[in-house]
Length: 233
Ligand code: CA
Image (tube, rainbow, N blue to C red; front, side, top):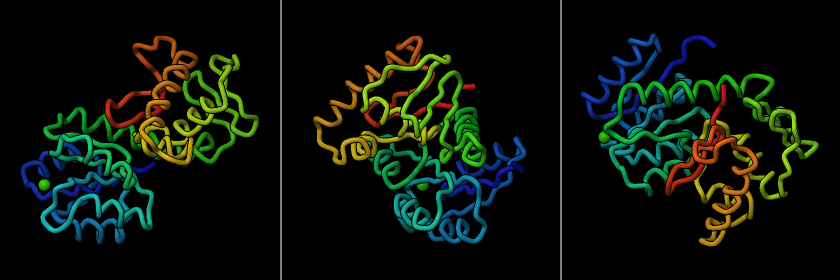
């Protein structure tokens, strides 16, 4: 893929300049918008590859920017926000954001998140992408139509719920999925005890999937928020 174009949505000039300088240094192309309205306009007119989105904008809530963009596009959105409260992150993710970063952030962290997102983008455009019937990530292989998963060539003995969970995370590799999103997809609802069950299923799934459950290679935990399947090199 050519050098991706990033739309930087941020009203705070010093933060915006830091992001622009970082992108320039690493030879990314970029566009900037200091308001939500300009962000929505540029997103539709220029179709950027990735959006960096501040949630606290002068004219509208960043969450509404996500909803508007999501009404026509799946372009990856990384929320970058001073609001450290989990609830804002969860609302942003549930509205369709892919990832989040809390201010103040380091330039390395910003670049790392961007790389994860771009890898996800290029994966979606290749054979091993989300719509393919076989998923391969590191030593993990999932055969969706056959309903089985393999680690290092050996079939994993998964319960139907564990398999559903693994498929849901795999189909969204690189994206943070909230507890609500996961439980609604697995059980069709999201009650408190569903989230508690989810934690239990995640423990058993990881025991089967991860070599060292304390340093998971595949499934990352976002405490109080949800889980993400990582792309393993
Ligand atoms: Ca702001």
